[in-house]
Length: 95
Image 1 (cartoon, rainbow, N blue to C red):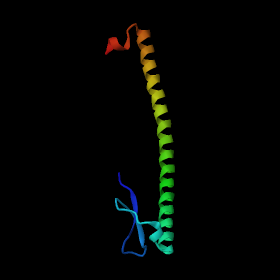
Image 2 (cartoon, rainbow, N blue to C red):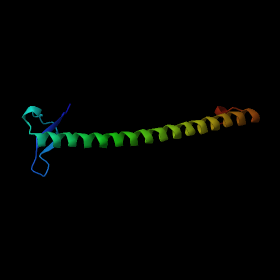
Image 3 (cartoon, one colour):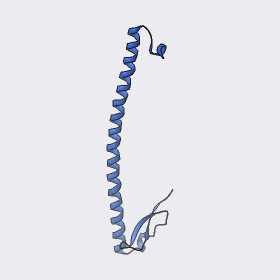
Image 4 (spheres, one colour):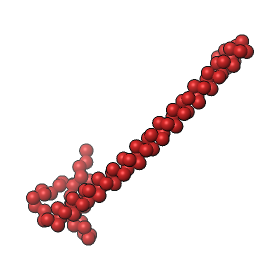
């Protein structure tokens, strides 16, 4: 399992989150590095929260669509059974 870690990179931002690297001790970081790290973590959390909301909405739509499809399938199966009963043969006998 990979863990998030704060590491220095050559950019305008002194600290970045990367996969699989060890995390420095927060006590060793300067105030500006800590503030930057906190802001990066907050931004990441906000992005994850937005994504979670989006996935939740998509999931709800898919559940609703699945329920409609199930109802339609059940209705068609019931219709086929009723048609078979009226004609004197069962659905299985015809297929």
